[in-house]
Image 1 (cartoon, rainbow, N blue to C red):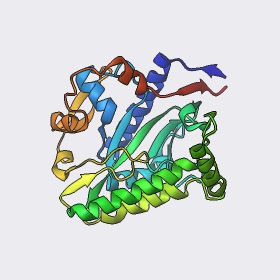
Image 2 (image 1 turned 90 degrees about the vertical axis):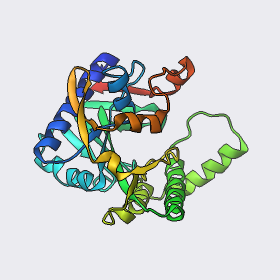
Image 3 (image 1 turned 180 degrees about the vertical axis):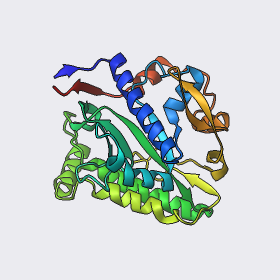
Image 4 (image 1 turned 60 degrees about the vertical axis):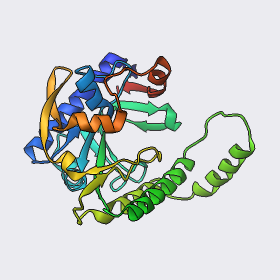
Length: 269
């Protein structure tokens, strides 16, 4: 197989994003570029120099419509993966992959997938903070169990490692997508409530606990990313400050290195 270098990886990802954006526009599905991709668009007008992926987000109702129709009505080269459709897929959010490529996520110790873009989900959140904390606690609990299903790699033997290996020995009998589906079920509790707030209830790494007014994702504009225009929240300045604080300030070299993904990608011959 022919290895895909970083510049070519970006080109393939942009191809996926272009197809996804056109598909969403044609089917009246709302999306926006998000997280590091949105930050890159505003600060660099393209990729953050040390970044190697693309993030988009959708409200749950648009995401589920995409999940239902993308593979059926799409061109075939690009496929939407999610645990509801694929027993071997264990993220609680979706990815759109280029099936003419293969990508190994070394950080996941062997996850074999195609070059992709991440499709994150924004859910309605309860207006009651006690109920919100309960949902986050349950999400984080299932997220930890999901990670225990992944191999540990070559770390040194320790009491903690032995304990984790014991948990893994038990969880290997649990279906691969089980905990991702648990996270999704927990996240969908307020899907039809249309509360005043929204949040990310499917982050599987128990890092994200933001909650914001739903109005932040009601109005959109277009921003430039790698010479093309894509949808972004009209209040992107407010959103990026919530996510990153002083987002126009470049992070340290150590933070830049930590943000890079450990991946290898190839064309399928």
